[in-house]
Length: 277
Image 1: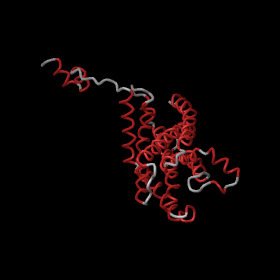
Image 2: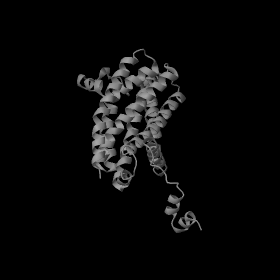
Image 3: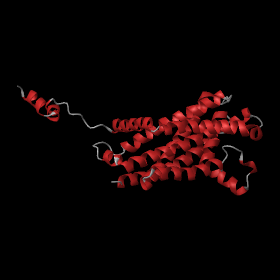
Image 4: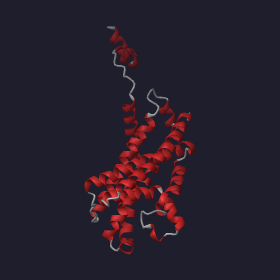
C-alpha cells in the first residue's frame, strides 16, 4: 500500500492533503460573489422579501393611478407620467430596508461572527450583501416599469431614458443600504431596523413630489420637498423617462444627494463593521 493509499484510509483530510488538492483561499471577488449568492438563496427561506419587492410597487401604482389619477392628473394616463417615475424610486427605497434586516438577523444569529472568522477578505460580506441588494432592486424596477407599460405608460425618453432612470435609483438604493447596514450593526434586531426605516421612509415618501406636485403646499413644506432625497430622485427619474429636456440638472442634484449619503454612511458602516465581535 502506498503512502497516499494509507492516508486515504486513515483520514479524509489527510487524504486530501496527500492528494495535493488543497483549495486556495477565495479572492475578494469570489468571496463577495459567494456571500451575494448566499443572500439571494436566503430569499427562498424568507419569501416575504420577494413578495414585498413586488407587492409594494404594484399596490402604490395601481391604487394611486386609478383612485387619484383623474383628480390629480386630469386622467390616469397623464398621471402615470408623473407617478410612475416617482414610485420607481420610492419602491427601491422601501426595498432597501430588508438588506439591513437581513444583516441584523445574521448578527443576532451568530452567523455574522462566523463569517468574519473565515480566511477571506473581510469586506466580502458587506459587498456580497450589496450585490444581492442590487439584484433585488433590479427585480423591483422591472416590476414597476413592466406594470407601467401594461397600464398604458409610454416613456418619451425611450429605452435609454428608462434604463438611465433605473440605474439612478439602483445607485441611490445602494447608498441607502449603507445607512440601514449601520443601523443593523447598532441595534442588531431585524424588527427594530424595519421600524426605524419605516419611520424615516414614510415621511420622505409622502412629504415629497412623488404623488402630487408641491405647487399648493405651504412654503415650509415646499422647502423640505426641495431637499428631500426621494423628491430629487423622483424629479430626475421623471425627467429621464419623460425626456423633458431638463434631466441634466435634476440628475446632478440627485447624484450629489446620493454621493452625500454614501460618503456619510460608508465610513460609519465600515467602522461599526470593524468593531463587531
